[in-house]
Length: 99
Image (tube, rainbow, N blue to C red; front, side):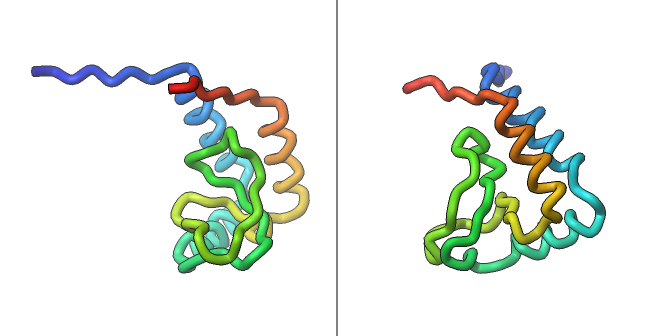
């Protein structure tokens, strides 16, 4: 039996957006992001973007419950890169259907 995987428009947008965000990073920033993903949790108040939940935009860590596996922290990238990321997120509307 063959399984069919359907990708919604929202999923496709998030996939492309994640790819574009990563393309904005320099090699040094990629290294810093990779190191940040190995942390147990983020510092309280640290700004981040969850790469699996881009529609939520920039969030602040509570210092305890933030899973670091798929996040891009503001501290891991240069100011110029963060500004470009925010502009890209602002231009891209991601909507999730209510289930």
